[in-house]
Image (cartoon, rainbow, N blue to C red):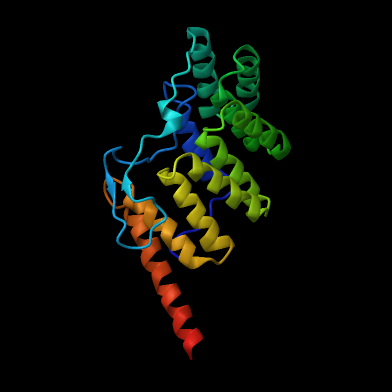
Amino acid sequence: MAFTDHKAFGFGLRLALAVVLCVGLTACAIAPDAPSEHSDVDDREPSALPAGPVTPNPYTQQRIPVTSEARALFKQASAAMEAQQWRQAEQLLLEMTEAFPQLSGAQVNLGLVYLALNEPQRAEQALRRALDINPQNLDAYNQLALLKRQQGDFDSAEHLYQQALAVWPFHAQTHRNLGILYDLYQGEWERALLHYRAYQQLQEQPEMEMTGWIIDLERRIDSRQTAQTK
């Protein structure tokens, strides 16, 4: 294929480091998301997307009060993560989770810190705490699914992605990640293609990389079907 798997959570970690710079500590979504809540989804062909207008992301619609102290701690922790000062980031985030237990985003970032420190058990605990605090935290579902995928637990990863899409079926990054799981790890190419197309459909402009993935996967599906009919 024209792409390789994400190594050592590098892709997920880069996305999350962009997320931590968002102003809303509890309502940052992994970009890119749907181009507009008023966009229409074409239901004339099989699709992984519901028909009709794209609804707002319920996670980013939440308005949980955040104090100036919480913002300051979050900013310091984000800077430490960007500098890969993981132990410093850990201490800042632990302080934040103790002082502001209602903020699920801090638990997500703590999980990412533990992933960077190669402490998967602690990472999973932090990510699950994030979901306990806020079951609409799409970042937590995706990061935990990536962890489960890395551990070879593909069924759990699939279930987590499906849970994320149950929260918001128009979350582009979840469609992308679930497509990768079906494509590279489970050999369910037809299902992967649906989610790749869903991801592409949710972009303001088609992504060249995803266009290549879709073309390649369509060719592999055709080749497999041809071989099966011989």
